[in-house]
Length: 196
Image (cartoon, rainbow, N blue to C red; front, side, top):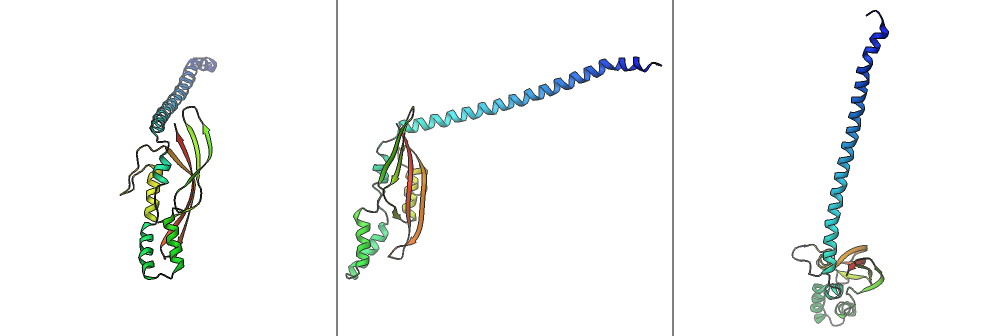
């Protein structure tokens, strides 16, 4: 081969074939990436459909008076009230203890929710509720409340039937010592309730 031009021309089909194979390989790789992405997206959509179906099922079975029936009827700091009652029978002149006992027994220390806003959606309504005033409770009382709101089990407490979807949107917890020298938590919270 004395003419290099003929040699280069002979290599040209091989170079074109190599370029075509490389281009096709890159296109195939791009398509495989797109297919994998579509599979992931389809799996996420299916998972979201399952979550939505579960949510709508929960909303359909929700008791509209759930917060009034289960949360507003809870009594807090009952152990402290019993101890103060026992102490006050021996110390009749301690007005601070009597005032604390009156507060615990009066019903002022209960979860009373006030509706802030109601918004209708296509298949449910959202109700924003807030506590009318902060409430004092101990650790066991807090567990009871969280079980009823979150719908999870914290031994020995279990969630109740008919729970609407409840989401805590604002939660303020302050720890302090009560007059009886017990640790109490002062709770203030807002809920978003989804119901039928």
